[in-house]
Image 1: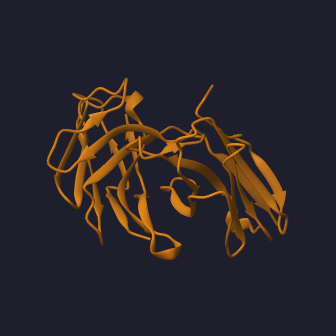
Image 2: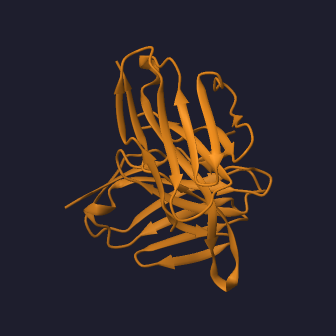
Length: 111
Length: 122
C-alpha cells in the first residue's frame, strides 16, 4: 500500500463549479497536511497548511482533514480558469526529514 | 511566503557536458534544502536532502557521483549534473526548509519551492 493515494485525474470542470480534491494516507505519524498548487513548468506553491482535524478556510479554498479516516480534501469554490493547475497533497511528520507528496491531480477549469 | 530562486530557468546542453543549477533562499536562511526531479505529468521525486556544511543525503537509486550537491552557505545550494545524457533531461526543482506561522502563535516547518530548471540534454 502506498503511503499516499491521490487520483491523478485529469479533472475537468466548468467555470464556477465547486471542485473537490482528495488524498488518503496510511501513515498515522503524519502531523502536518499541506496542499501545493503547481502550474505547468513552474515550481509548486504552498496553498494551504493545517495540522489538525477539521476545516481551514482561505478565500475560495477550504482544506479539510479527517485524521480518523486518514483523509484530506481541498475544496475550491467558484472555480476560475486560473485555477487550472496540478494540485499536490503533501504530508510531514516529525519522524521524516522531508515532505511526502501525492501524485498530484490535474485540474482544468474551462470557461 | 518565503522566496526561493533557481538559476538557470532553462538549459540546453550537449551530451557529456556538466550542468550546474543554483538554488537560493532570498529572504531567509535555510539549513536544509531539497532537490527534486519531475518528469512530464508525474509527481515530484525527491533526489537528495542538502544540509549546510555537510554531505547531502541521497535517496535510494540516485547516483551521488552523477548528481553532485553542494550546500556551502545558508542561502545557496547547487546541483551539478555531471556528464549529462539525454535521459537526464527533466525538470529539476529545489526547495528550502523554512518556517510557516500558524494561528495561535504556533509555527512549524514547511518547504518553499523554487521555480524549477528545465534541463534538455541533446
